[in-house]
Length: 479
Ligand code: ADP
Ligand code: MG
Ligand code: ZN
Image 1 (cartoon, helix red, strand yellow):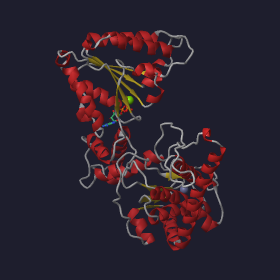
Image 2 (cartoon, rainbow, N blue to C red):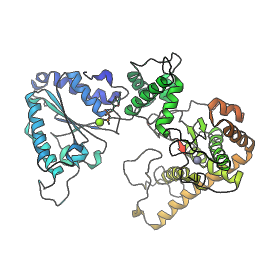
Image 3 (cartoon, rainbow, N blue to C red):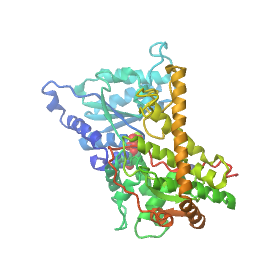
Image 4 (cartoon, rainbow, N blue to C red):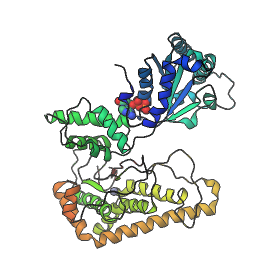
């Protein structure tokens, strides 16, 4: 079946940039008549699953030209020389059928920067394959109307030779879809799926920040399978949310905790949830559960009200306070410290560190940008390591400021939870009794109004709907 732009959704900007390529392929003469050169190589850059391969196929489909493809990873284990001849063959076939598309997936697997002092055309298979690609790209001229589309999620490691003019000199960025984009992608993948008339794909799109096209397709599929197992005539919202939990957290586990551990997990999760509800600007809490799943003993889901690209200091503080809520609740209630907060502390450290080193949110450090530029720019990512080039004193200040932010936040968490102890107890008890509570149930149990939802979101793509969990190697989980 021919794939076209109708099958691609939610990545309009990238699609728009490729419309021109389609036109080149359809009417090469139109462009050549005036002496213009058709681009030879376009690099599609974006995280896995955002639809790069799909987009390349859609370009071929729209232009109704043949699609030749190879993947960088195929060449890793090949016998020396085979890669290069495979490349030659591919280009030669494509030229015969021109206009045509050659798609090189995972370009970084072969196209990595070549080692400095290795002799040119080195013995290594990867390098020979890369050289052959360069030779082929230089060898055909744009009259051939063969366009190379290459995909990667690591443009930073590519050999600069690949990016020179006349090679992959155009770059199209494929972004993670925003809320509107996710809705559009869900529309595409639910075309043939009978849906409950009450189901709102908008809501699903809202609850899935961070997910990319491939994840969303997977989500639709899992939801449909669940609905079938439940012998429903159509797929419902519940099926979608259950599928989402399963995908994000792994299937529910049969794990029997003793009463004391259950209580501790219940209070831990209740601590997160209460703070999520009470701290201004924290993300709204969608669900709390103490059913162990995957790696987690308990989970508090909070989903950002919208995808965002820009965070206020208040929001970040709110997130830190919320993440410390589990530990704070354990300390207040049991006066015992467990290892159950490992994940939380990791997340907290990452956020606080970045506040200090990247975002100018510490007066002492000021507006210095101290982070290594490792391409990581999402919250919850591993960014934020301080480069040691900045000297010991500054490094010590960064450590001190990071600690200050975390300590202050922890005090806030303790204070709010102590003050709201009755709500904490009520929620923990309800969890022990019912195991999972969704948003309306939580609000009812703790006696709080729903949180104001519309916050000025400053555009798109952001932290994943970080579910948060207790790792199993905790004293709260002796197995
Ligand atoms: P990538 O090449 O960027 O890793 P793929 O194109 O292989 O991503 O995506 C895998 C599958 O996920 C696609 O075949 C398609 O079914 C679905 N998908 C990914 N992105 C999108 C999108 N933007 N619109 C519709 N479906 C998508
Ligand atoms: Mg792909
Ligand atoms: Zn926790």
